[in-house]
Amino acid sequence: MKSKRLRAFDRARMKGLSGLIGVDEAGRGALAGPVVAAAVAARSDFYDTEWCKRNASRINDSKLLSKEDREALYEKLRWLERSQRVWIGVGWGTVEEIEDLNILGATQVAMRRAVEQVFSSAQISPHEPDPLFEAITVAETNESTLAHWQIFVDGKPMKKMGYPHRAFVQGDSRSLCIAMASIIAKVARDRTMLALDCEYPQYDFGSSKGYATPLHREAIKSLGPTPIHRPLFLRKILEVDPNDDQSEFGFG
Image (tube, rainbow, N blue to C red; front, top):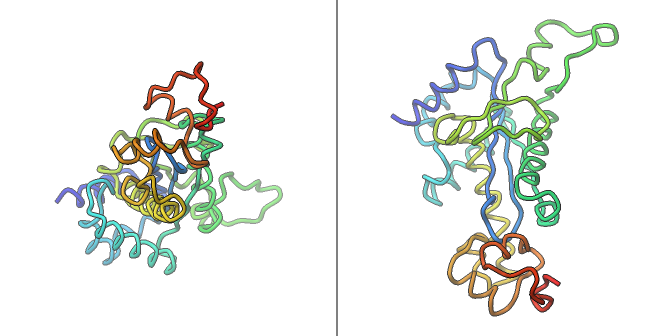
């Protein structure tokens, strides 16, 4: 029943809109690896399709789903993308950007990249056309400009994301489009960390996904950080004194 509320939540807020774009991220609290954002765009009529009616009950905040369910839903969403029923964008905030911009700044960069991928694939213009230079019908305007879409973001407002949006705390368990983005972001990042586990097998990336598990923390203490670790996060979580000589661990 809860997932029916997710669908109803979106439908109640899209009156007069062409559709919604849900945005969420994965990996903000990890010690290693990128932060990943996903955007999923769906036109208003998608919510009335038989597919949505049958499958919406399975879609929820990715953190509340089993790995198997997340993976299965990820593939279903990618199938919808290939069928052009939804449009998906995935953006990355690199370790270097996390260090330079802090995690919030890097997350907003990743979200902007994901949203702009959706703009491109769904042919949504972020700006209204200039009637002096562009011949465009009213129907085309409704479909193709951001003014007729609404971006929903999980959490608090992202002031530097670059595009107007509405933010919902715990949005991934309230809004269907945000929940879909949550699944895409989580699976995309998990697969990246599994690949990095092959490169750095001692750090438990396959299980921890870069988060502060005991095995991961112990590996950092005994082996030092890798190039994909976030130095600022290591200082905070492992209580490293930045005035100490940490050159052997890559902090110097």
